[in-house]
Image 1 (cartoon, one colour):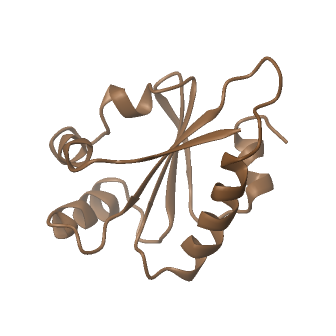
Image 2: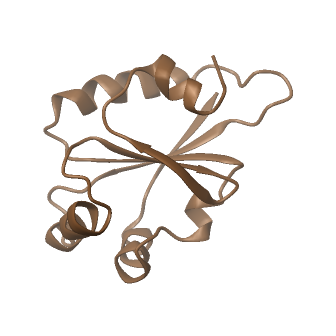
Image 3: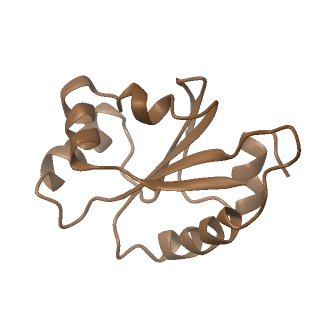
Length: 125
């Protein structure tokens, strides 16, 4: 149902320069989510669990999997810069932080949510 991927430093550097992830990420599939967090976050551990579970489920017939790009940015060399982008430019101080894209266009954001609510964002059950 979902394909999990990890954002590279190159992807993050692009976001830092252009205030958005590259088309390679946000246009990777018709439906894309980007999950941004810090490794210590207990809510992320919960989300990580259901993301793993969803990655083993088949996408409903006639639909493509949702691409989910993940980043644990604490401990990275760009931590401070990225935190500033996330908090000041994107206006979100909480973790985990999710950005949703349809056909390469941002259509929503969230913080911690359940698997059911996540899927409903994309019209899935």
